Length: 489
Ligand SMILES: Cc1ncc(COP(=O)(O)O)c(C=O)c1O
Image (cartoon, rainbow, N blue to C red; front, side, top):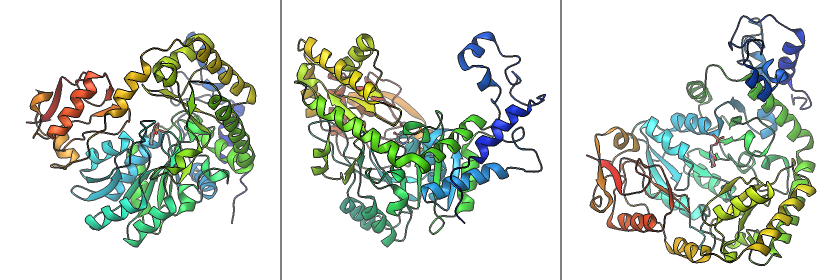
């Protein structure tokens, strides 16, 4: 029977714990704030400390066991269209770990997008599984990864009939969604589960004007970060799964292995609240956010020297849908890098962005923003454009955009075997022909050039030498200057 989505069973239990006024002989040591240092009290407030609890035990009595949490998860499963939902306190990161550990063991193959979040590569190091990559194109103008196509997935499945699952990241950080129904049908025709990292899509299910969500599209499981774009507290996320192609008991075991044994009650309660808010008001709230974002997109496009990624991106390979609430803004035509634009917004206008890289900034627009907030943003951008004197940003950007990351070559060892093998740090120039022991991801475009266990080619070395020369920011390796790389000994 459908649940009454208006109720918030877990959140209500936390509230009633506070109202009742217990004498606490349980964690944490500050005892509902009574022993908390003054500065901590000032920072988080008395009301918050009074419900700083680990989820079970205190909130529910032992007669109820964990029934309330399960009930709250059932409400969420129904809201997001799944058979089972798990609340997560370590973000989508831990959901990706649990799914990857469930779906492939040592030596088994999984199909993963090359632009996957690093949590997936970490999961492969934990599990010992072998990745088989599908490589999305990089947009030549914006330097951002596009998304994987149905044809790419189908071709990879033909080459790797032994694969046990297909993973896709959708939407991307810039809001670019893959053709999820098409990829779901392709994976299912091959008889294997289709998993979506939908960390950036907690809202999709609740507003028809947004890209189709993974569960509607036929995914067997997905993770969504309820903290990224809806009202979950930071670190909250949910894992959603269907039983047809997944062993839900095994998945549950993996979720338990990848979560803290002391999940924060507030994080759980916030998922309950976010789910209720979305099911009751999601469509209208997101329609408002879309209108705000589209207004800003139009205004920004009218400011000379600024560009804002828009629906034209739908012409690009692999982009089936676009989330208009994500604003990717470039000021390169004013000579400003994304970092410089971020600093100008922050220092002069007290506007804080989601992310910046050499090419652009990314901003999230949600139902928490008003038109006044968007006006502040647009006026700040206008002022920055009027002041800009034209530095070397455009020329530097052109250099980065000309650098095309080399294609994936060969996986010689599993990520786990390479990661734990004896290794040495060699000068970059001497690394061709060796096997990488580490992950190397230059930004832009934020796609790994090397993962543990991959063959390092002359082309990879040449690309990384260029990347170091033009000061691309690199994530992953021990030596961020790229003078050396760690290779399997
Ligand atoms: C595509 C993608 N997947 C997973 C994650 C991890 O999510 P969380 O921060 O909730 O652990 C991120 C984080 O930015 C992400 O961008």
